[in-house]
Length: 322
Length: 218
Image 1: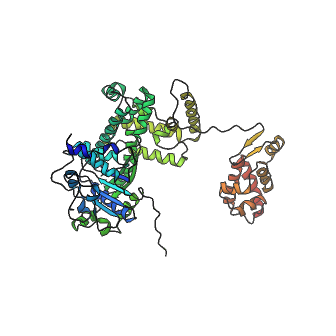
Image 2: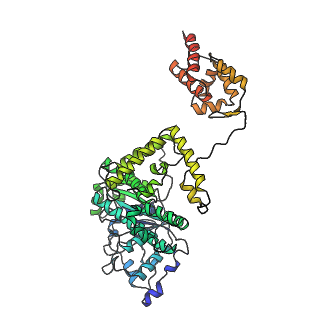
Image 3: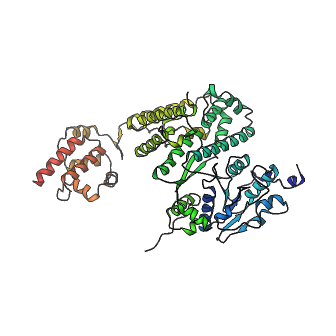
């Protein structure tokens, strides 16, 4: 462990105190399914409702979230925070032209998720955990790298973005499976289940374990008490699905099916936040480098996004008086 | 191959509804599940193999056959409640709230004291003499209905709320004010609803009431 790591490993603080905000992680495996679009729109809408919101670009290595906000790269970002131990996280949060919305850029040439060291990751996670705000929205990178999964699992709201294309669904499912097993592994150790999971997985053919739900059920049979505890902690994991780029009613109808299948497969709750239409407005607005929400406030997309954001902060609608 | 977790789930878990779910919700959940596990459902991709999906679909059908039918559902609820009691036997460590939560239990109906009976809306003291009389009545008019209602301890408000029949109509029904009642088909519908709540033979009640009604109208 290097000196800087020793000095700034705050990870012991996490878990001993409550997070200082509601952390929303937006992940989903495949690239190009709209994670950045969903997270930036969500952050904008929450900020618009008056919540102090921080949008964090965790797509290290290929960060471009600032473009979705219609901004150029910022002076300081996660890159500087990680490389300069004397910086505080507050220093790298930059203001945006939008009220209540602040932004942490992830733009960097030197770092990416796979080169992030354990100490750096711990310091960043503690900083996210301890930053006071109403909401912190984390835009995760594509792929199911361990670091990405850790950021995903630390959040209290775990949003999965997918599109109705089979490749996207496959990756999103893969991401969920990876997240599930990573969490399971961590708690296996904490609950001192020994190598039980490994043993069960080795014999999964004979035991008929096919899905994570089966695995949990089997643990429950073998170790009733700790199995229950395991089931309980696994329940913290709840996938909240956003179906993006729905091009037809058929696509949109897929949402409930995905939710049902996830519920059965994982045995932990999966929830459908909503589906978003495929809309040319998105790339048109991106070309103009303006947030879609400001450029096309009368689109159906706006309504759908509002519906989704309202599941994070349930504020009553303002009614028009006519 | 047997799918472990699924086979240990109750029919309610399989359809993902709460044990208190009303019939419409169960039907909707059934349609949703059938769509999700249908052979050409894109949502299954990389999660369940076609054979597993087929098995799931079979379980969904099985669950709906039971839960979609009021009597079979009731029998199943009773069975679940019994299994719940069995689960509480010693060889299992103290059941935690989670465990109880995962097994739906329908609260057992409290038995009434001797000599009492219940309707959907009330509990009343059984009067054998009146019951006897009631069985003989073949001519139900408003006054008789009112007597039955009072005997069964149902207030006019309760009855109106339950049947969603307006109070003016309900009063008219009880005082045989045929002028104030709507057209024959509607009036018959009202009488049938009331008879059902009272636990009377709806055909006898409605036929006799409507005979008087039509006699008056002609």
